[in-house]
Image (cartoon, rainbow, N blue to C red; front, top):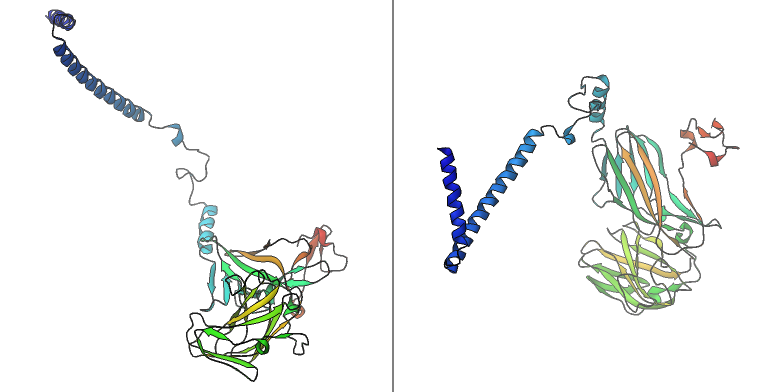
Length: 416
């Protein structure tokens, strides 16, 4: 019976094939039937192929129950299937890690961000960001707060002739950046300090050769100030707004003859100011030609402010401006602004003082970056000054071994 059915089906298929090839059949009808059949057959083939592919992929995943990239190394001590969490070594690791976690802290000590404190579980370090002549380590302390040393670790650049430029006297305050932080480690980077010659910042009350800016200037005008007066050699004004208070005037002195300003100022609360000038290619005040200075508020204070650090300090200075005042109603008085000669005040380098801090230790790194072309030579020094009466003993080690004597010690092979 089955054979008869198969034979009938084959004959029917053959007859349909001959009918499709019959030249007497209408061509339009033949095309429609052929297109419809082809579309249906294509859909069936596509569905069949998709089903076959899906079945094949599913079958492969099911069959490959343990692919090679899931294989585990039985010798791996951290394999969760084989590791022994009860071992003494593993327990010590966990306990030690928990004890060290969150052991590093860093914070500004005041709202004006004048100082920054770095601390871990064994010690702490205070960095002075703003105090003139002391922009360095204020102190390194043990965990009980007792100082190992203070006001030291200054970085200096020394010329071949011995002239020293110190980062502690930088005309710019330091700033703190931290690039990497975590449970067990922080990096604290104190950046932005330049190198100044301290000798050029010394006040000379008997300076003979100078240009008197107050006496030789014309009229003064300002912004966010009032009650501008110049009486008995004293220039004064009162602050009306802290947005941008300043006072300026036209002047005329040579940059070759004078490269600094000695200023005597008195304020009520303000402890810093900025001097703007117009020199070289600039004909009026601009965003590039300025320098900042700090002083003690409340009484007359005299400071020397180098102008040679200002960009394009060439030709003549034709305008001078002082920006000062951080309280509305504050009275600012200036009784001396003298342009003086001090010599080269700085070298074109910037300091980055880095402390890699862990829960139980700190590593110091000193980096210096050139900010302009320089070819005069020199060397970099980083000094630590410790009071002798606080040191019971020191130990040095080089290729010859350990010693407590400095005489004859070969520092070229020093280990510590």
